[in-house]
Image 1 (cartoon, rainbow, N blue to C red):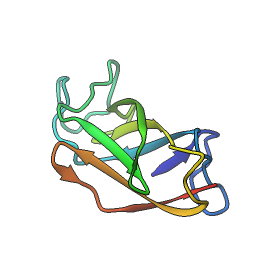
Image 2 (cartoon, rainbow, N blue to C red):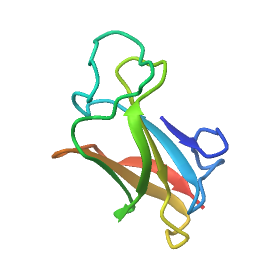
Image 3 (cartoon, rainbow, N blue to C red):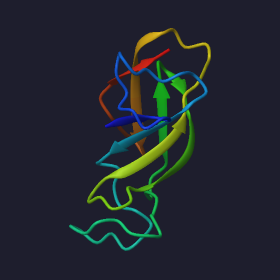
Length: 112
C-alpha cells in the first residue's frame, strides 16, 4: 500500500508531488531490532528492521525519514520517505524497496 502525504491512496487520480512525503507498507524485510513477536500487532517502540532499508523511485534514491514496525499492524514495516523531485517526470513511476540484499519487484506509483 502506498499513501500520499495528504492520506490519499496513491493513484493516477491522486499522484504524489516531488518533495512530498510518501508512506509505504511492506513485508519481507527480515527481523527487527525489537522483540520480534510473531502474530502480534506492533506496539511502541516500533522497532526498525535489522537490515538496511532503501527505496528508489524511477531509479533515484528517496530520502527515508522513518522505518519501523507498522503501528497496530501485524508483520508489516512502515517506511516514510520523501519523494525525490521536482525532476521526476509526471506519470507512472517504478518504486523499489531494498532490505539488505533482498530487492522488491517494481511497484508502480503515480507522481506529478
